[in-house]
Image 1 (cartoon, rainbow, N blue to C red):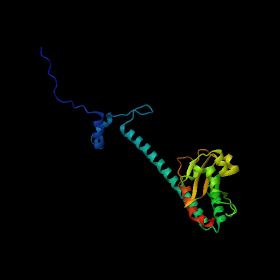
Image 2 (tube, rainbow, N blue to C red; image 1 turned 90 degrees about the vertical axis):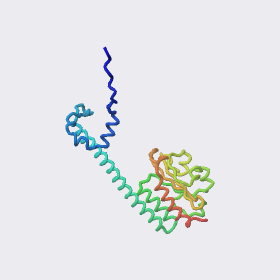
Image 3 (cartoon, rainbow, N blue to C red; image 1 turned 30 degrees about the vertical axis):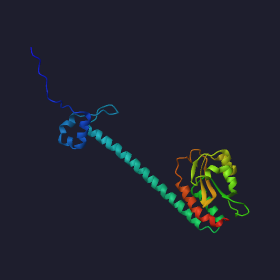
Image 4 (cartoon, rainbow, N blue to C red; image 1 turned 180 degrees about the horizontal axis):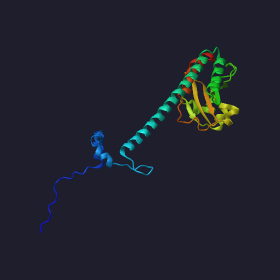
Length: 232
């Protein structure tokens, strides 16, 4: 008895990837083959099977909710940016309109406290007290600053994070014990002539990954205004 001849025709079985590629290239496939929809069902997390159309509606609804959530966040960010712009504009105008060093320093501390609700602000000038007009700023020599906060002055750029007790004490005095995290930026006009620091009670509020665009911008304004009021 002879063996039954084998079928030499190539296999026409399609892989799942090939089916997916075809449907992606022909998104109207089920429009022209509606009879297949009756035989399709998809498992759903809630248990019972649902039709493909119902599943598509569900997916579209989820995508719509996600897009609305993203749009809401964008609008919230836009509103916050508008508020920040208004505060910054008021501060810059107040700084520019200052008649002397005391006016500028007072405007800075007032805005940081009332507008920005910053918990703690410290402004250092490097020099000698008898030569620099009195203000809310603290006067220290450059050698003292290098001794106590040298790492904060090395790169001439804003930094965020936590500081040691000695550094906090040097910057904020009696308020140091309440401060969890800080952001600092050197004030530079050719060479460093001071340092601006802000503190928050939350140790995680100012983080090393946090953007410092605002603080750097205010420092740039001070870098252009303050030198003319300080002894050379």
